[in-house]
Image 1 (cartoon, rainbow, N blue to C red):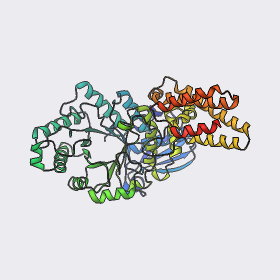
Image 2: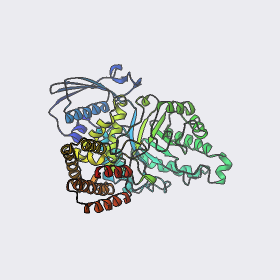
Image 3: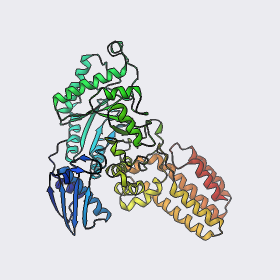
Image 4: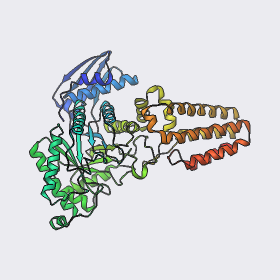
Length: 520
């Protein structure tokens, strides 16, 4: 990734002017270029020194300067700027996201918006691989039309401006005949078109295809799929390096999840260049956890550190009724020692994806000190604004359902427990006060979600169910206060309506149980 950006200029473009007097000093030394924790030479390390309004940044590159300025901006926003020296470098070398979901691809403006926010949060990599981009997958042989190519070039240029590596990915595996030289030539010509607009990082995706070779000619030449893939990867990488020695390649294998010592992935890894990155999703397609021992096993079996394609927060296919907006959890704090990095697969809901992506960015930068709840609350403030964060969290509390299996609706159930305890102890005044306070928050949240904002529009399917929950709880507490038996029929009808709505929100069984307790 090459960038002619001026870090101060990019900083002012993203954050605006600051009244701090900033001095950047470049130094090419072990003190600045080497991270003792990761035992890695890096151009992303920096030393940020603050004395009143005077700021001195020591770094080895413009990227390091930019990250230090992003750090300063965040401290200013959070009100945590203090005099002192801050020595910072990332835990993971590769920190990014991928537009790799099934569904409606992001718009051009959404791509720019997500990229800008992730740059602010010191991610350094973006993969372009929308499954439903025809020229990425179905029409992989055909070159992009000029108007589409121009948009891609703008994204490539924007990534370079933000010090991010832009990987363009192609997925030919659904129809490619590996033994046909004309097919390989088409792949190279398509790649050269993307090279012409400044792309130097490529992805060859062989996922979600048949495990068996489709053509008799391929079976005759290669025998089995893994041999065809090894040949394709090695030929492709060889041509890429001849084209430009700086080019980087990432491969997604057909077997991309499991124990990491299966036949296909072991043979593939040991027979391709160690400089080719290999995507891996962990034990499962959507892994509840990623552990260091599993990464070590992958290294021993493939001679490659895994580059995790983390299928969170993606919610395509069977997960389409879930909204994955909670923070990333269950990734080992020392995983950076045994992996290249993590690339988060996003949802087709670009605005909603921003919240979990920011938590990924926090984890990837400093995994050993990552606090998921603090990161999540900070992410919400960034995406919806500080003035709306408290309201939004009331709703987001119900959106923890995912492969991560974290507790859902924790804040609501904590309030329910407090109310129930107060009732049982005879303190009805406290119970009603707690109920009134929580209902007030829910109703304020409801009003926010009705606003015509991008994130509110994306959340309509889930917010409509939340509105029914609000009606249920408002009526329940009204019944408790007024003892109007006629309300019970309406309450039961609302519960039936709530449970019939397909969106996953809270836990239907638990909410019915809690409501029954409150009705007693």
